[in-house]
Image (cartoon, rainbow, N blue to C red):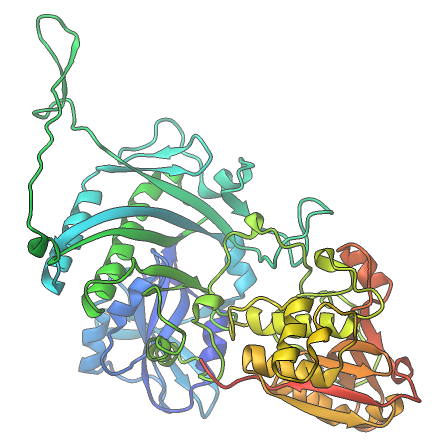
Length: 601
């Protein structure tokens, strides 16, 4: 009997972006007789579908093939048949075919080497988050071997065998729940029950939305509705009681007797030592499990997750420069369009430019655009939201009512930004720092989208930058002097390498005539705009424009707010909101600093 089929909505949408004949792989997981496909990759020369599987969370496996052909159902070719034989997660591999001419997607199960048409259901990313949890295992394991690819492979293979032999146990961090190789005694709780039955910060049942928190006074960085359980590793340091040298009982005295430990030291010459690799392997592994899964079943999942992480590390070390200057680092990414985690190991100490060829390959394999960064270290998913000391609010415009423009076209900022305003960071800039704060909001956008790892600059850093550019005299540093859109442009270029387009309007009323240009900016660039006029500066986050009637509203973020980080007050009092043209001064001219998104990965 073939399983039921469900597809992640992100997969269906991304398949529609491919308009040429290609061959791809599908990745999914089984639960309750259902095959859920959550991702796919495209064939790239020099790579394999099975190898890419290691970058997905454990339990997500290669499960089928996707083709892009005009014709509908066809017989399975020998090459596709060979690929489908590698599918282990199901006895009935899936074959999808997307017809880009008809914009149609057909699904088939391979049953007895014949194609059986299958119906499918599409799940949203939110649906999947309600059904599954992610398990994050973090630990380190020692690696000592000769400094060559083959010995590294053998040593890591030995580590995999060791952890698979029952010599490890797992603990849900900050709880009394331990997972051993044998079955848990009594009735085993489900993964979902573990989330609902604990208050530990290491089990994050995140059903909250952006800028919400358990405490109304404790606003954290952006979070989503992922459930993440953190796991630590314990290794068995003694032998079983029945083995030689372990703990055993003397027959006569019936008291425990422990053999004395033996310490062996082998002295090596300095030249020999330089030919050996000594490294603590940093393990950071993800698994994806259904909430109905029994906790007693997690042990094998975690062992598989540990082995999958070791395979990634072995591949990285064998293909990189030896010896590595530092232990490699593991990053988990979750690009919005993809909808699932994707793990990459990078060498430490390498710049973004040096890692570009690696990132480009992953962009090609996942058929992702090569015009914006998705897999830079600064793009990685932030699991430590609760440990963050940031008090900033993010995307404060979300949740606002509609602008009121009838039949308008809406263009708003893409991605995340932080709301910077007067009196933050212990800085009293009330009355003079609005453009500084708008610049900080713009800079935060580039950081949160992964274009830079640099934090938003402080007032002092902005002033020093302008002095170094010889735009201001040395006395400008430490002053309370204003800056405008021109200075914002200079700083973005010097600090972040971001160029800007400057739009000039002779009055606030003239802004209503620039609706098409502003709409085009938000649809193509998606960056927030700093606008300065008179003695005030604001940030424009979007427009709603009716081309026929000329009716327009501007989504404005006001940096002049001096209160606490209270989203309700900020929205209800109009510190962020849709503004009519009358909001702008008819007698003042305005300069708009419109950052251009860099084309890079």
